[in-house]
Length: 443
Ligand code: PFF
Image (cartoon, rainbow, N blue to C red; front, side, top):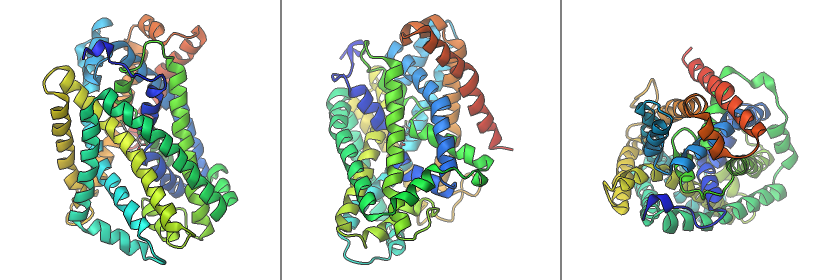
């Protein structure tokens, strides 16, 4: 198929696909536990600020570049550099994105595999359970982790192999409505069985005494990860956007949906955490340990738990396909490899790197890689604290300072005011803040 003509079929598909990429483990697992460990409301407020003034302008830029040059992130950046007479080294942004995508997919799939496993664990719940022991049992078995990691990555690879329209578009049209309905069911459950007002209070009453410099770092990292920015996933999906779609409006809807789902996840989880007298700051184990023990006690808890982990798995799947797509798009647009082969090969690489993350739960738990971090935490650090912020920083610098403004204006359309507003943020606000927060982590 000629790439020039490869666009999503449905009018809403770009939004569904980009929201599918954005809404993932980051929203339903990461956001609640990070809000929980960073004191609640103040973190939420800083997070919202990061989405609005750092994330949104960069998302607009990524979509704009993808939509104009219609290639994988590497070819998009190369074509952009050529048209604006910049150095072709700007394509490094694209390469960084492809690498970040595979690195993130490697550990994302291990975590998503645990979610898949938990669907069945929850459905099989009968009465009380020692959920900490259960989590240790699941993660201490390399073979069990390997099985679910492999299942998840094969599903991801299979969807990407099927193509942009028959794979990604078909799946997001199916998965996203399911995700939304399940989320609503979970919030209703929390409303009935939980302490809703305490959760509202926790999430939306800022207590700035808990804020440290680290809160900003964590909130910005979370905003980048959650919006899928800085690695070309959104740029790549933008390349399939139809010509008549509005970029400002689509970006606003995608960022809005992503934020909405993160908040709803908080409202699905914290009311029952509080009702059962569990502390909100238990960290990454919040859903796998704290929540599981509550499901064991809740009326119809095994069903509610099964649906909750199904929701997490669906959200993870619609994100993981966007982690694999940019590099598969690169290999197949160059006709280096046929799509199914590219998909099998690259997912195989991610699967292999993922073995390190899987072993860091058990056999390699004492091995440290970056600083005192195990393999999984090192990959997470590499992606979230380095590759994504740097990718986002360079996208902002490129779109704001190097791309010919006339090109940006004609691609973005809309009023002069909106253009000037975007230009102001992408030149002076987003890159400065990303740089400041990025450098701050070293001091
Ligand atoms: N946004 C996804 C989440 O919140 O789980 C993760 C992700 C997907 C990050 C795709 C980056 C990306 F390109």
